[in-house]
Image (tube, rainbow, N blue to C red; front, side, top):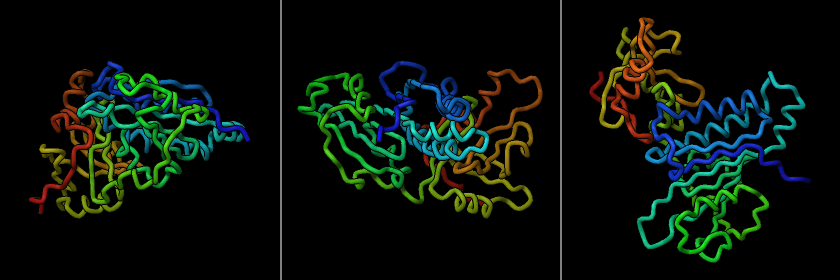
Length: 296
């Protein structure tokens, strides 16, 4: 039986030198459109992640979800879904600064259902650990791909996205992937409009805690993202929010925080300036989120 064809390639690296602002480059939007509108098209996209390396955990979760949803999408003809099921998505993640004497962190090759991941960041795999079927790494020495002192390893390493790469890998136990903390709530992604996507392994439990802490009548709560605290209102969707207010609501497996645009003549620059991302003082991806315990 032939191996699924590598149809979509998404490369994330701190070496590409493109925009590093979340307000100018929305990988989530591009990838979601690729899957939902063009599931059989060949794709090859690059994203610079210098300074925001942690977005890749969100992207991996997204692609796992997209694979599942496309294979069962009611709007797609059965032949399209069958062909999609015979394709592979390759994800390349490179962020391995040289801080010691070794030539960077090894490149690991992880496989999930019809997804192949080459990464230097094992923590990016933590929240999809249950979906990973195998993991191995390319030794930094005597690997037939690059030399022991090669400074630009990433320009070679995406070759490992091919299942016929012909190189010798060292198998690793799945235990090399760290577990994602069950009690952690963090900022996972910032989209083009400055909306905040947050992640926790148990969003229903987190949402219940928010509802419990919300002030009676007001249905609002004060939270910290990093060191910045703001009051936000709990709602069921953006539609139910009032103009110019910060709101929080569940969205599939995530909890999102955003500011609803004012219907007045706001410019695009003003909308970004007043976004949740800016109001929380541009928090780093991975910043911890917590409810202000002073809330009664």
